[in-house]
Length: 275
Image (cartoon, rainbow, N blue to C red; front, top):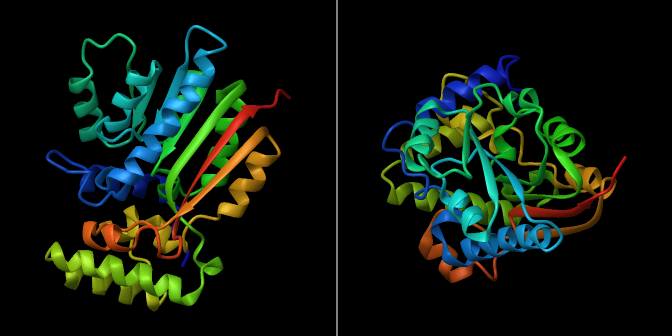
């Protein structure tokens, strides 16, 4: 399935429509909803910021797609100075209100995903939390982040992106899809979930459907973790690859989170090598 040429505009519109006032990011976000996954991510954020602060007095952090600021709080607790971006106008306004008067937080409205490049700043740590799968050209975007926005010695932490479907075994994909549909049933949205899956099985991409716009990982069969691993290995001293199972359903996550085959990944690249 091939997204339309206007992907950038479509993603912006979908973010505005899907994440408006009153939107609860936690419901559909395993890394926010499930304590073990959240704790793992919080620990990694503290780790990378702590590493920077042990060698210098300030750690500038870029958090791309900050949502309502759940991990901005983590950055502040770890001692970082965050610049947070959002392409959803509603989420941007929420962030502005939430962190008004906090001097170390800079909230940036980024409707086209290019504002951080235009600002021309550099950072010690870049966080891409559950955001890569929303970016049409994610390899190009991550390359720009590494080469233009990150200082030598800096770190990039990605988290909560779906593994590339063609590399997953058939039974693993079946488990993952079944868990998703079971969660949809509890949300009273089984019909929408089945309709979305039927479109994708037929190779249909509908740029008027929020599900197709927001869930790029399904439209494009996940995120090519090997491409990102290759990108990071050529630019950083060390790379830690985290692969794990995640689903929106608390029951399924609680029963099988440590036993079911991985369907999600994160990457921690440390020590950006100077050109």
